Amino acid sequence: MSALIIFGLLLALMLTGMPISISLGLTVLTFLFTMTEVPIDTVALKLFTGIEKFEIMAIPFFILAGNFLTHGGVAKRMINFATAMVGHWHGGLGLAGVIACALFAAVSGSSPATVVAIGSVILPAMVNQGFPKQFGAGVITTSGALGILIPPSIVMVMYAVATSGMVVTGPDGQPVSSASVGELFMAGVVPGLMLAGFLAFTTWNRARKFNYPRLAKASLRERWTAFREAAWGLMLIIVVIGGIYAGIFTPTEAAAMSAVYAFVISVFVYKDLTLRDVPRVLLSSANMSAMLLYIITNAVLFSFLMAHEGIPQALGEWMVNAGLSWWMFLIIVNVLLLAAGNFMEPSSIVLIMAPILFPVAVRLGIDPVHFGIMIVVNMEVGMCHPPVGLNLYVASGITKMGITELTVAVWPWLLTMLAFLVLVTYVPAISLGLPNLLGM
Image (tube, rainbow, N blue to C red; front, side, top):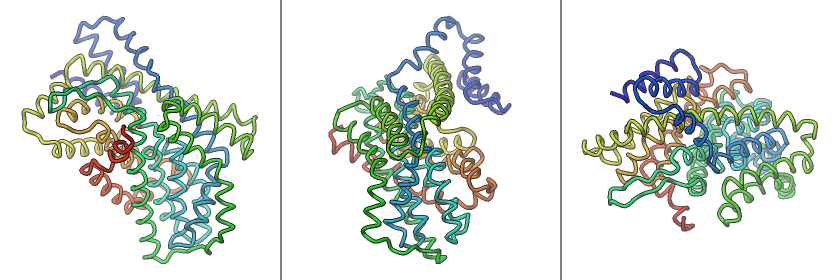
């Protein structure tokens, strides 16, 4: 009954058009003050302790690094490098867009930032080259979603924060703790590269089928020049991933390092960003960080209410007693998350759903890291379909296309992503292979 009242109230508030973060906060406060006897000082304490986690500091730093890179000419050089490598294949510029998105994803951690940075440069070039605008928009909208799967990923940090401190008894009676940010980052490498390969194949296949333009093959000298110019941006991948794996710094410290590194190469190496532009980038990053931190704060309160009412535990008991197997549970989770993606953005979905679904997943023997990657892939799909797909709105602003037209344009790549979601859901080795190999 408590669950019905809580989720009914939350849904009613969201249907009024109220922002998710405020809906969460009002739902919690209304329920706590009218149907429980929880002291008000407990609520106030939860508001502050909810964001008093070291991992959360990674979010504003990765946002800042992504903004510096978006405005600092890094994307343009990555596109030139990718074009030099694969531009002569069928749909060369489209393939270059997929590769450039994968490379930029590995330094930004954000899907909308990847769509803006890569799309604003390569989409006009594709139209000038003779590609249909719909083809270019479909490639960039879906490939931009790699921003939250290829590490570093802000959504992975969200999942780690939402489940941090949770220790649940597994099916063998042993306690299982939540996944760390470092484990999730390493687990995202292979699925991210695989999905980039799937999207690139779809791009190449459609370009070959419709005989879209190809560029002249770049010489070795041109390829070396393009690589040398992009090298400073590509080095950031090694700084973040290499630094975390080598134990030089934690993911949060890696985020701070990436922000400083992005500032230095954008302002002093590439010089596409002046010191006069820096306050504007800082203000933009602060706005986005404040929005996400406000959502996190209210989501922590929501998780506290869920735990206080014993809803995750009751759900777990019900599913286990109903004889639900792990693969049936994963089908339900995928349908639930894909449905949620129709009217909520990824951060809110992860922060609300992860604390509820995580204990059930562990009780059914599902690895926390594998479960986290599966959730992230679901969030990728949600970013590319209406009505709330963030990537669609960003791409719409760049291409000046309507949401309906864009939705039709992304379908071939969206179907590819759904096929990959099924694969990553039922083949845990894709997510767990690299962390296990590295002894994580």
